[in-house]
Length: 286
Image 1 (cartoon, rainbow, N blue to C red):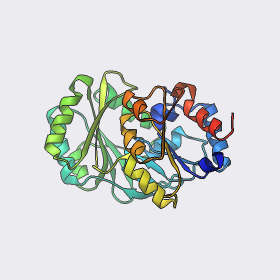
Image 2 (image 1 turned 30 degrees about the horizontal axis):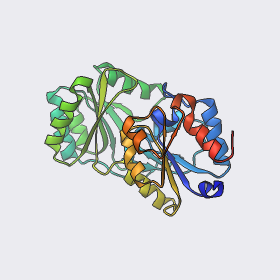
Image 3 (image 1 turned 180 degrees about the vertical axis):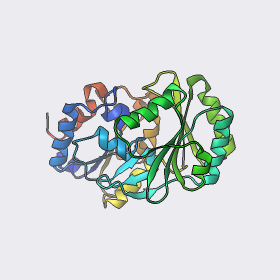
Image 4 (image 1 turned 30 degrees about the vertical axis):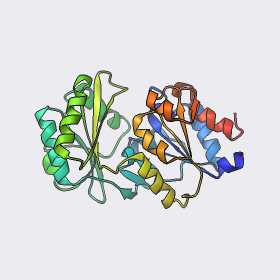
C-alpha cells in the first residue's frame, strides 16, 4: 500500500489546508514536507496564490514539480517561474469587467502577463482589504507589484490572468450577479470571504478554464504522471474541481462543509498540521 501511494502524485492546496490560519507554514510542516520529498514522494501545490507567493510561503521546501498558481491560470516551473501553460483573459473581457467594477465602485487589481513578464497592477488601496492584498505582496518583496493609474489602458496591451476586487460581504452576491450578466460566460466569477480581513469578500474574475481540476490534469500530462494515482488536498470550494478528477481526496477538519462532504478522508485541522501529519503517517513517518 505504501509503495503504491509513494508512486502516486499528491497535489496540495495552501491557504486553509497546508498553511496555518495565520498564513504561515509551521517548522514541523516544512520539515515533514522535505522528509517526504527526500524520500521520493511526488508532491506539489495548487493555489490561488502566485508562484512568487508560493515560493515565499514555502521557503526552504524543496519542491521540484511544477506548481499550479492563481487557481489554475498558470502551470509554472517552480524553479524558474516560467509558465508552462496559461488560461488568461483578453482585453475585451477585462474591459467589460472593469466597466462593472467602476459602477460599484470597487478598486481592481490585475495580474497580467505579456508573454514574458508578470505584473500585479494596483491602485492606491482605498479599502482595507485591497490595502492588505497589496501590502502582503510588498512584505515578501513581490517584484510584480506595479502602481497603475489606468488599468483599462494597461489591460488593452496584455493578457490578464486574474482580476481581483474587494467588496463588503453583504454586496458580494449582487456584484457576482452583475459581473456574470455582463460577461456572459466569457469569464468565471467567484466570491469568497477574505479570511484575513473580516467583513470583506474577494471577487475573482478569471478564464473559464482557469480552475484546479483542468490544471491538475494538465500537470499530470506535462510531468508524465497521467497514469499515477492522484491524491488531492483542499479546504475550499475552489478545490472541488480537483476533487472531481482525483482518485482520492483529503480535507482538513476546518474545511468548508461542502468540501468535507466530498472528501474521502478528513484529517486534523490546518492549525494542527493535519495534512502533513496524515502524509507522514501514510508513508510510515512520524
